[in-house]
Length: 265
Ligand code: ADP
Image (cartoon, rainbow, N blue to C red):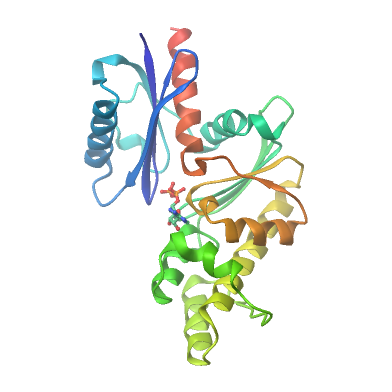
């Protein structure tokens, strides 16, 4: 039996999805990119294959995507993360309807992607120059608040009536604002909500550049944070679809593209 691998080497995490010829997900993983993208990607794939009793030989075609895609020498093909994200979102978001807008927040960039009814990318806007509005900002803010990124949602939903704002558009200045808020004895819960709304406002600006069409689908690691999802829904005044494994959508797209490419050989 043939299997196909999609490897998304991101700035923060390596995501791998293996699909079979019927497009079923056989295995998937998320691991840290660390400092050695190629080595860690290869080791992660090896571990993932072992976990489902497969070997490298069982993979008929591999597509690499993401920031570090060019480093994965064994890939049969590399593809832009925008294309892979679009293909993955269409599949992972099937149950929500036809995805027309993707919001992707990664470790160090944020994107808004417009799709037509057929799932083709018609427009996109990207911010990769500033850490504010990215996973990195959430990591830094959570570390400053001495909580885990996986706890941000809990804090968000426990925030009270005190509405705080973080206005800086630069992550470094925003961190100073967080320090000032802590110094003024504001509750961590209210600060977390302020961080989420500040990111939501930045995403809204990005979305404005491509135009918002429903269904809106949110992916990337920060989409695991339901507090951020709620802030985005409020800021954009729309329902936001999030798949079960939002961090692996782009890797899924790469795996599906690998399957298509193999069948066309
Ligand atoms: P990249 O593709 O650039 O490596 P990812 O899409 O993998 O980025 O997202 C990484 C970010 O996801 C991290 O910086 C972190 O902020 C966020 N993240 C990861 N796991 C969680 C979690 N369990 N809850 C909330 N946020 C998370």
